[in-house]
Length: 100
Image 1 (cartoon, rainbow, N blue to C red):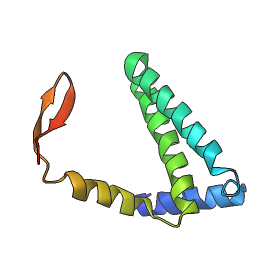
Image 2: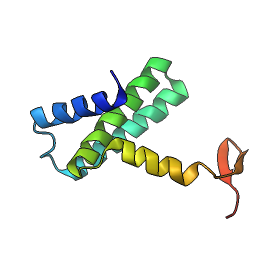
Image 3: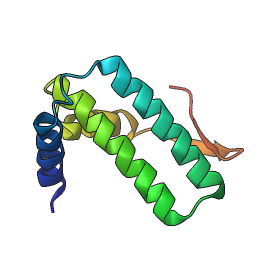
Image 4: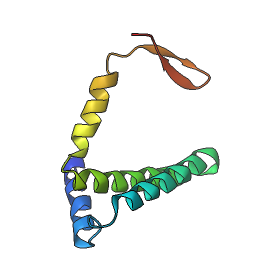
């Protein structure tokens, strides 16, 4: 399935289950829990556990963006537009951008 088709399917899955009517704060809490699971998967888990956690995070982000009528692609594009010309270096395992 193409990424746009997956986003449409996940949004419909949320609609069909009434999950777009759930408190958005609850979705944020679920997102934080899934990020913690990703951290655990990175530290001690398998590739499949990382894939599962990232997928769950994407499903929750799709719910949040659907509520605000914002396509995930727009978010991804905005982030890329912000970083595409950024320069910097790796310091202690983190990318440190050069001063503007």
